Image 1 (cartoon, rainbow, N blue to C red):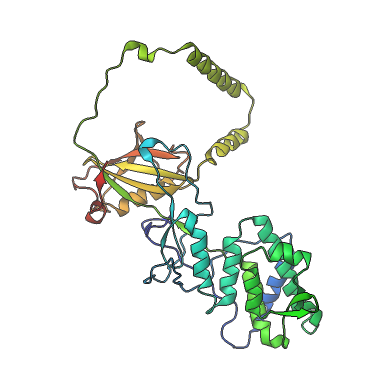
Image 2 (image 1 turned 90 degrees about the vertical axis):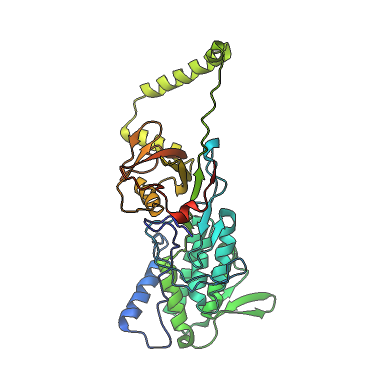
Length: 402
């Protein structure tokens, strides 16, 4: 499995690294109590947005859609894919991207974009028995579709927990009416919120025509779980699948490119085409004459780039093989160099990637948009090495004709 992490390991899946705030049944230290109180204060302040944090530590579950031999997850990579798994638009016919795939960070399963959400839910649900608070918290932050709805849910849950901690002996703060507007509109719609409440110890009780979630027993019996839930909500840990590079290898045919003879009038423009060309040039001139700051020009360029989420690049070798990979649209060119190096027979050889047909040597320090690699591009592999074939045997065994 390949992931969109820093090279030379695009084939690895990222893991998870956070544990719950308390372990076993040992007494909590004063430092842990102060940390929990600080987390409560952060949750009590709705104006403070949740901060990004490392994902929680979860064992790789094996749902029905995951392979039985799923391995434990590894260290989380530096870059993540927070975008939806939509296909890039306007990709050229030469560089057709059949599908965008991702790697589950829990079991390393390779998934089509449309299946990621259901698979992550199944993996996290599989961890409920072992660590329900961590798993339910990951469900909340990893599968919530809208940031506003997520923030509203966390705010309401934070108030519930804050009131219980501040008033541990008052029963009214341990009871949540399921018909309450805030609970029904802000908490219940978020996948994982109800699971988190049940993981802490809330149970359903009916009083007359009303149904409540009640936290029974003495405060000490659920204090550790409550503080752990507070810490998880404050950390806002998410699990994000890595983009699968989807390496593919093609072999160019030996036949030459066919030549076509066309009449001279093929290049002549019709009246309608002339009018369209004139209108396009007029708009370009008007745009160029507008007084715009550098920030305005950069913002306009950024709006154009946001149309594409992914990029597919083909690297052409002089031995007539072509290596293709999928990247995030805002990846660095260094990621492309690392991707190529991973598939070389001699990874230590010096080489350059040259943009075709401009013959521009690509700088590893710049991003894909600045290098004109979005949404699709062809680059040439340039080296003084005579190690042919350039690609290793594991890569070449799956080569197919282009």
